[in-house]
Image (cartoon, rainbow, N blue to C red; front, side, top):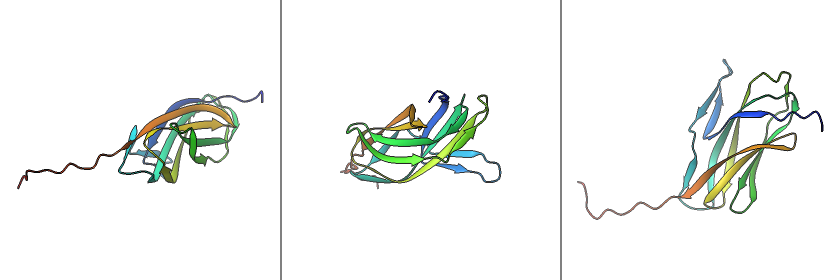
Length: 142
């Protein structure tokens, strides 16, 4: 595939959700994070959002995101974006993807991997941490 132009990623954020304003077309990035807390495993998370901003791209692209549990080298989720045709390498394109109902099998490092037309572009990692139960206070503040 000689015509493939690998996009440059300017931003790759993991968040609770990405909201698209239907009037302005602007995206709101809600609740960015570098780690998640979970009381027990497996843990179901209602939704994760991913925001991407790309440039230096040209042609027709099929983008795919994979969520990988790095400790087990296991793909636990995937999302595909609609086909995108980019005509000018100077244009900046941004995308928001919300992925519902992800199940995290255990604590550890996770990574979103971005692919364009089947080629790896970049990754963004985060940690899922076991939440400690609240400690019992022997003294009362009342």
